[in-house]
Image 1 (cartoon, rainbow, N blue to C red):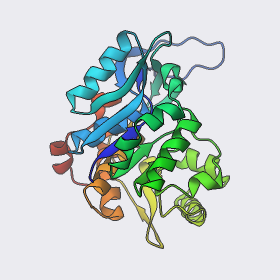
Image 2: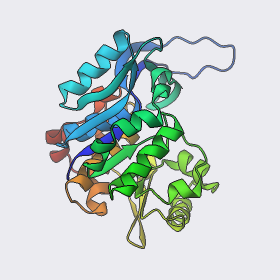
Image 3: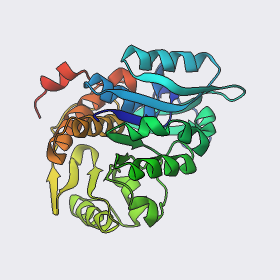
Length: 302
């Protein structure tokens, strides 16, 4: 079993770049408007597929123009879309993304993503059971996430949780997760602890390990990654690069971790790959348009 099942969101990203974030009531001029295939789940699926993973996507889209573009883009990278349901009467999810000096601000309208139900998860139970790793996020209903995790745990399938958009999660859910990949903000919300420095992150990693999660990985942008390798908590830096757009950088990191683990690599090797992929992603514009190929990753030295 080496396959990856990604259960999560598919969104069309509506992206504009601005030199200034407007205050309430202010209008500013932007530039470079783009529509780019995105969604946390789809971003992770495409990342893993581009890096050589065998990937199946599970989710919901509307019966509209955006859904066709999203599905065709997944198929382009050999992601299995046979379990992505097209739902009538509900629009495909969209993300409004404003990019300013490389950083992004995102508002998501989930649309069809919120039509994914525990019953739909049951219908792909055999797919989950036959996989090596299940990757889930929180842009879909929590009851669907919980059902997917339960099926995975009952069948000894590893569970990788990207807890975004962040929310408080029950200890009973956290205890079923094998790998969790929050950024600093998400980590603060989940743990209730401040995560402003690498020392703070190490305390948060220890806290989440105490909740029963074997592998905790906190991504900190330019400050690198804090994670545990066994009981040892480590900090790995990332190189200084010109950041163009951080959209999907966290998603690509998580997708890279999924594919590395599915190939039998260690958590240290998975973090190294995630660092490379996330860094390369931040050096280009857009979500799935910025995701690197395996060749680009192999030629990039941290």
